Image 1 (cartoon, rainbow, N blue to C red):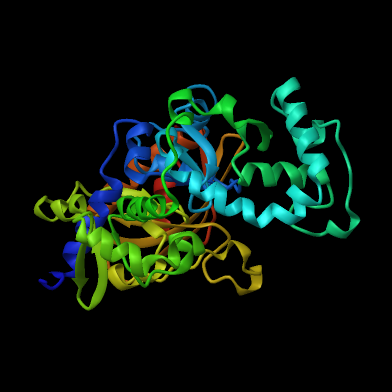
Image 2 (cartoon, rainbow, N blue to C red):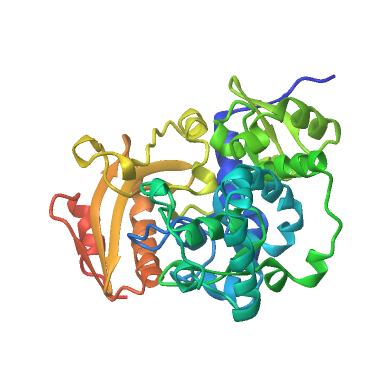
Length: 394
């Protein structure tokens, strides 16, 4: 058997950037490339999923995804790597996730609170989509107080039903889930598809991870693989995907990985036109932060849960990409039509003269993404950066 394809870090970076950030004509193309987008509700400058899409879809604005999810039903608000937005075409494959997650709730909810499950499902069937507080069935378990979903039996039951695939998110009110029966959300043609055997579904989901990232290390951390769902099956799934020629072993200056044929085809293409891109902290591009450090020389930690006194860079810092280099880190805050630049830290090395033209263009685009009409920059930030942001009016 031939050995892995040898790649330089420069080649890997160029293909990795092209795979992730070649502009998409619309959101559906972006979802088709990424397979899912991680959902996170924290929104200093839009949410993570908004930031992922703005980096790829020209003209995207905060919240544009909602029409696609709750009106067009082209994507659904569910579970993949974590809470995610997923194209509906990927729903049948992810049924295995629901069956695995249901086991976690079997005793606590489906056995010990069988009456809650039946009552709440009947309520939704009769009344339509509901939030937990809107359910007539209301009980409290004081011994659950302080747990992730609190003491409300209705809330805990609905989350168990959601994780088990019996209900789905029909929409949101002030960011909170509105739950409806799965059979009223999933398109009939998908609902009626035969379910794949679990082993085949896990194999296909492992391939989905590779398609999402383009190149993926077997040694990547468990969270990249969705923890136990895919992580512990790698010894079986990776050789099988190689045998099927769905992925190819590669070695990037000593770093072992697998790449998709689509990713490898990008090696023969020139670099995409350099532009300044503000990258989401939970973007597929950043999923394997150790690989980013190995390929780009960029150490990144998301410090949102780090005590303020111990933060090195800031609360919600975005890597700043230019060409195939991560050149800076930026922290933004957007409210009431004002985009505030709170932190900016350059990496070592001159970003080059073309960077400043790119930053001016991307800053104006980022203003439009936030629907900001003016900007504010903190005084300690590099004067050249400050001058590009401060006078802007979208």
